[in-house]
Amino acid sequence: MKTNDLTRLSLALLAGSLLAAAPQADTIVPTEGAPITGVEIEEEGLDTVSYKDDGAIQTIPSERVVSVRYERFPREIDQAETAALEGDLSGAAGILQDYLIEIRSGEKKEKRKWAAPYASRRLLEFYKSMGAGSDVILAADKLIEHHSSSRYLPQAYLAKAEALADMNKLDKANETLTQFQTIIQRQGLSRRWKLECDLALILTDTSLTGSKQRTQLDEIIKRADKDYPVVKNRAALAKGESLVAEATEGVTANADLLGKAKTLFQRIAEDWSVEDEVKAGAFTGLGDCLFNERGNDSERLMKAGMDYMRVVVSYKEHSRYVAKSMFYAARCFDQRGTQEDKSRARDLDRRLISEFPSSTWADEAKKFTR
Image (cartoon, rainbow, N blue to C red; front, side, top):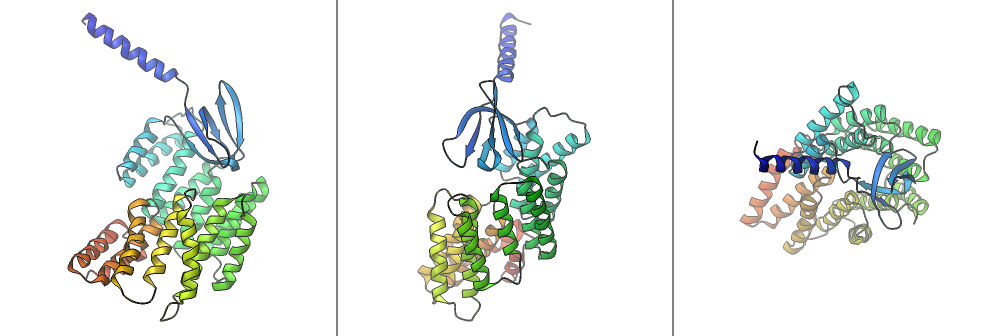
């Protein structure tokens, strides 16, 4: 080997060893205050997130953590995140599934305590983005079974209940939420999770409709207030959706109820701090309000279509809103009636059927492609 080759090899090995030895530069985003940067996450626990800061172990209550951003992932998680960014959610889920099987079987050792729970949570989110309800339930069960001390445990229960409710398995959804209630009481979890669970129980209670449901949602909004804005915004979104549902029960939509819903959706849509899933719901709601207003004027339909398309383009990870928005955007374009708009509608219907084949909205779209 030539001297230059040896030098290059030595430099490469040195760089690799320095990179491996370099401290993590992870970031914790808290509910209040500035992000905690330049730290190394140890574990994301149910009660606390622990991290190293200048070699000393520090903790922050999990209820005060909005998110954790990792500087470096294990190779498999990195591959999955890259696949997801490229739009290959199925491939990303497959990579994480294999990774977790190896860890749980003992074939693979992972020193980072946070890695497997993180991978389980991301697998759950990938399935949720794909609208794969059955897979969401299985992934949630695995997370609950293997990572019961993780910060992601509440998310698993709520995601499972939501998936069951979307599949009209309301008894199973309520059973899941009751189990979550027991965990909250037994573990002494934050009031935030009691509020989240109470909200989910309201939304899966078929005896609560219309004004009765909204009275319960107002109580959640009041209890959440400034301390738990995430829960407050979810409850406000649900209230707006309830108003739209009641407004459109008759042949002619109730303009007063639509107006109240529109005000709620607009506030959520204009708040930069609202999480993406809730914001996707708000823009879907704004589209619903415009679509159901009286008249069939072209400008109104275009505005409604643009609200729906905003969800399709900007919030593609949130399938429960994307599928619906894709369907109604197609209806807006179809009703506008121009040749170009009708072509757009057909393209959207085909895309909906292809991307969300098990969705009820795909079944509805098929009626317009015959």
